[in-house]
Amino acid sequence: MLLFIPFLLIVSRLNPKKNHFIGNKAPEGRYFGRNNVGILLKAQRADILCLITNSFLSYSLFQINPKKNNFIGNKAPEGRCFGRNNVGNFIKGPEGRHFMPNTYSQISIHSVFAVKGRENIIVNDWRNDLHKYISGIIKGEGATSLAVGGWKDHVHVFFGMPVTLRISDLVGKVKSSSSKWINESKFIKDKFQWQAGYGAFSYSKSQRGPVIKYIMNQEEHHKVLTFKEEYFKMLNDFEVQYNEKFLFEFYD
Image (cartoon, rainbow, N blue to C red; front, side, top):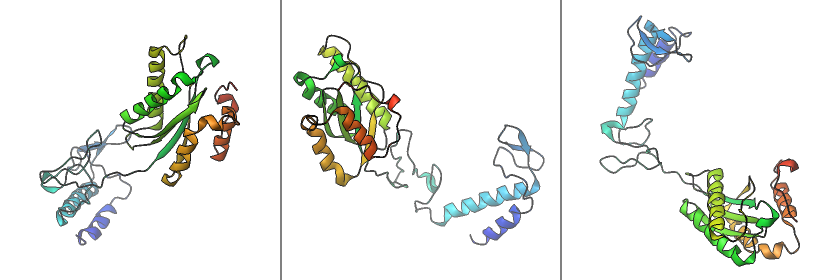
């Protein structure tokens, strides 16, 4: 294999001002690709040699040790698949081998969102049921529900975030599904809504315990601290830049 590397360098220098494209055809004078504005380009002799050399070198690399998982592409030699499909599942080859490492993560997110309007205050009669319902939404979306709590005008959710989801999608699902459940349950006279937006803050696994305890003791915290004070403290503790004009409407 090493014998081909100097040859590749020499061929590449034959025409250093030309771009090397991989397209449909490579014989000299024929069109074999497009540039970045869609114009067809003609092959040059140096380009052809580079294409041939690169192709041969790539083939040689694939043949050195076809059982290793150091390939780039969709299929390994002998047709063994080693990538993922569009939904993130591994594609197994005939021998059941995985040719790429799995994806692992540990992401803990604490999110906060607020009710819209004083008339939508969350009262004791159905507050706990709401928190249980939100926990079920989080689990249903494939995340790990670590804690759900809150007070009259806001909700805290703490969850383990999978790599297959985005925070905005998960929080959006929680808000839309829970508001629908509240309205269908007729807990309030008028239409219930959450305010637009949310806060999201990340924690390490070692910090989960204190965060869970904090969320589950919201009633005690808000005997001495308003939601506005709490939220500003969170933003400042995490050094989040913000504009007060675009924060929640507070009803303290």
